[in-house]
Length: 226
Figure 1 (spheres, rainbow, N blue to C red):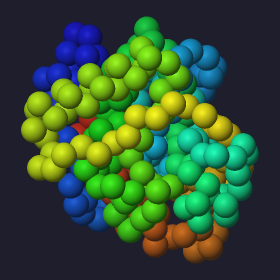
Figure 2: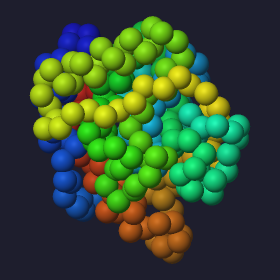
Figure 3: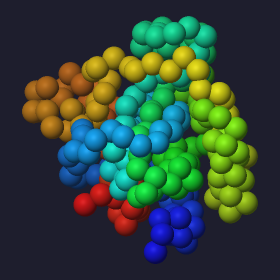
Figure 4: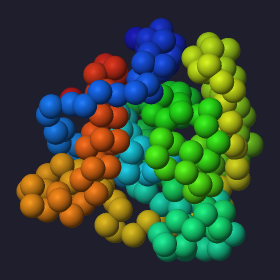
């Protein structure tokens, strides 16, 4: 059965549950920091709030060969994290997903993207507020833009979310890789000794990111790498 069929039958029906309020988990997952596969293939760039939250989820998906966190959509090239945090540069915290289209399609990855965050809240994801946390798909060309429009229409037609989707579609510009310490942040946290975790935004990791990882694994285990 092709991935798109699996998503059409099972994934859309689970979006609301997957993106709802997650309960605390009792086991810290070891999210892989590397797929072990060459980072070759097609790419997508999206933003769905804090990139620490989105990056570990895409890492788990079959067919994804690399996930990088960065900044996109702003008015200046190569901003710093501190500049982006001001909310004045126009950038969003973003993830660049590299994937093998023979294993998973851009359509299915975009559909998954809408399970990873709430696309109905403007410039906000949970405790994170500001334009740098907006829900956005950065398209490289008209084909990618049309695909994003199609996926949004499918999500809305399925009436998964109680409010209107406010995800913006923006041309990809001024993308740059985020600082090294942001890359695979949650994987670094998960593998660190307790003493080290205490200096790594432990509250945010345990309360916000960890439940997302566990819920995603539970809901979509048929789409995850072994």
